[in-house]
Length: 218
Figure 1 (tube, rainbow, N blue to C red):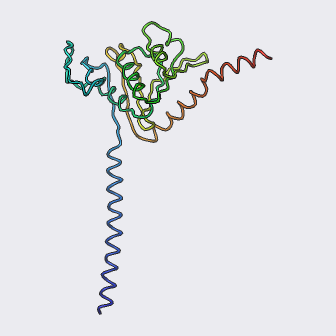
Figure 2: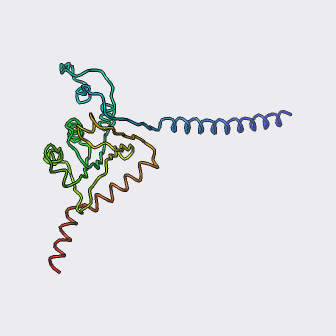
Figure 3: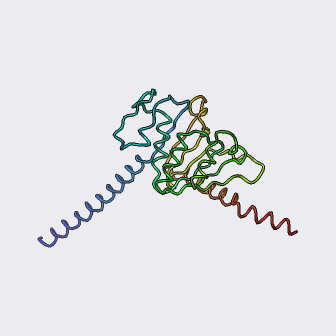
């Protein structure tokens, strides 16, 4: 009896342990799924001070006339961009917003690897921040064919996608009806990573000049 009772106790213990593992697996999977970020932002955004996002540890108060302590679509967008710790891949048609430029430059100073793809024609217009980024040492490439590079997306740390209709301009942020989707869903993030890589390779200046030399030789 003693032996059979011991066997039963051990058997019940094994079953309980197995059920506990299954339950823990379900809980972790459920929590991981719940933590996946999915947000939608709409514009135009309310105009508010965003200085605290660039100097979060500063003891100095900002005395600008804009509202303070207000969370807006634009401040949320900035927060997600500034969350980058290792890389930022940016593919944008028009880029003239100075606060977004400040965010990219700040990440660059923090040694975040930044790559920018932009439209060659719109990069040359007055107010474009692309030249400022290049002057700071950020790697920028332009489309080499006749089609507009009309994408508007960014990938943060290879895990977070920011995409939508919003051009990175002051008018788009403050005046236009625009949208931004922010997601960590891998099924959505991965295709944009692949597309960025494809465009980055396709618009490599070395490849373009090599083709020119080859054409001249023939």
